[in-house]
Image (cartoon, rainbow, N blue to C red):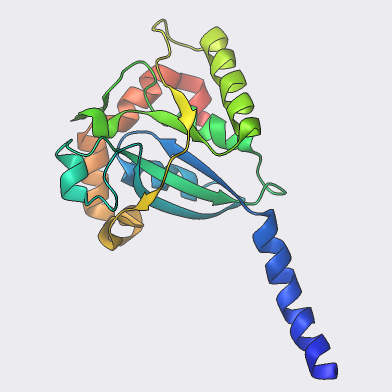
Length: 196
């Protein structure tokens, strides 16, 4: 009996924590860059680069990047709502993508780079719509916000070499993200909001 109580005492906190974690999914262009942005957020417990919004099951990077599957590159974020709110994740998302374009982000073009918020339940949809409405009113640029909000569909993790790319290949990642004009465009669009 004592052994059973000990096992339960050890497993219960892990089971409770797993029940309290939530998922959020964002498309902000290249998933390497999206992953870097969300990995910095306290309360985010995991990020996985992958694909969503297409027709093919188990798409490969080559298929998605060729634009033949209908998927977009996304980041699935696992987070602890007790430590970070979905609203905070939305703030991070907005200032880390260009909401004024469709079917592209920075130097990457094609529907596989289209931005979007993929909601997992009615509350996320409500919060995402409220966030978009707020930014439409308070945005620091003149162009209209074009970023769509849609229900999450099946998520397909990207190949292992794409996961944590910014950590595994820091020089290549920095060359890509800087050469692509990502940060200069984000600073131009969002200004002081990127500094928060």
